View 1 (tube, rainbow, N blue to C red):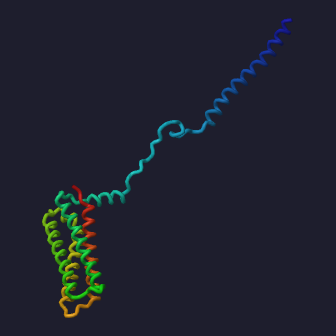
View 2: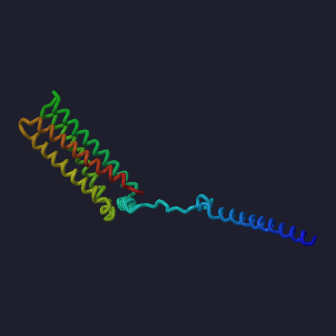
View 3: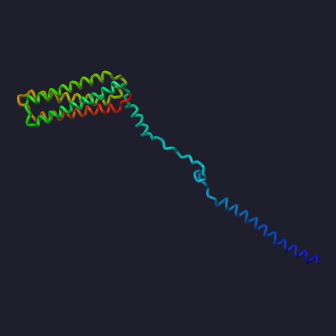
Length: 209
């Protein structure tokens, strides 16, 4: 009887031990597979904040900003009003030059009428010269240095306009003025006044209080 009991106990042990070992091995394998198979989460996937490189200002952009800052002309209210007045004077002189072109092409053209129109344009140009001189006299050395390109363009257009007026005076001083030459001179005058006006307009856009 004892032998039979010993055999039964030994058999039960052989069955129970492998089952327990199998369960332990399976549990360990599952956890191992879970640890190895889990994908690595990035900062954004795991809910964390991923710090990216901020989009900065490039070297070229910085150079443009610095150039714009250098081009700023710090002016007074009076100076800005003077520039606007010069722009208006340039427009009026340009209109006078255009009227001369119309007169030369019309049936009403004669030397007397052309001289009167020349006088109106000359008076307007003289007024503009005076306003320009007052503006430049009020500029400081620093303002002149900052606006030197605009001032250079203004002086160039001014010289061209006065040259065209002198040519027109010479033509109208002839006994029989040439209408084609007068028309070309008036057209060149209008172009010079437009260039002068553009230089003022550009300066106005760069002015700061």
